[in-house]
Image: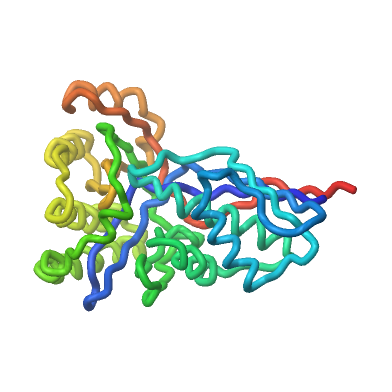
Amino acid sequence: MSTVAAACPGTCGELFQGTLDGVPCLVSCPIDRYARIRVTARPGEGLSLPGEMSKTRRALENFLERRPLAGRNLVVERLEALPEGKGYASSTADILSALACAATLAGISLPPEEASSIALSVEPTDSIAWPGLALLDHREGRIMRFLGPPPPLTVLVLDWGGTVDTEEFNSRDSRPVLSSLAALHREAFSLVLRGVEQGDPETLGRGASMSARAAARLLDKPRLDECFALCSLLEGHGVCVAHSGTLYGILLPSGAAGREGDILETAARRLSPGWEGKVHSLVPGGPRTEERKKSP
């Protein structure tokens, strides 16, 4: 019997989401809050998962069609879950963690492109399979581009509650609005890309802020203006949002991570009531293997 556990970072929405040359794509904002999955291979066949993990089941079925594990029954446990319907990339993080476990049990390395393709066979997917930041066509995978390591940033993650039905959101015909935003999206992505390539959090923050403003044309973001006001007060670099979720992120200098108490006190004085917040770090994407053991 062999057991592997893996974790994959969730996100505070996206640093960029829009269309580039007519292709919908995004750059996720991975943070140090993780989904954790454990997979145990026992004698037998098939998959054993909790009923609520149907998306992870479908992804593993796809993986096993490509990379059969004959004679082994995979038992999947969710050790730590991310909140759903908010913009934490909960489904993608679960899927990538489970795929990393299955690949380790199969004795193979699963490239981020293949892992993302498997995830895309289940649903629109976040760009967190790569060990850094990446641009991904989150619907069809026509664009998969590793951008580089994230610049040093702290993210104040804010949520006023509620959820967004991401399947309903992704089924909308937003093409007319997206078409009108095409030039803005191109400029926003160029800034995010330059920020990554130059390790410049200020430039990246400007691009994320442009993308956040554009997102409000597709899904109401009622707290966006006060988030920008708080960002200015905290001398931050910009604001990101979950384009199909409820999260807002204030992009702060990396040294802000040690001032969480002061930051939250300032937020409490300035923001409308009803929010929850926590300070996180921007981290590279990609699943991390955390446990590996074999027993007789």
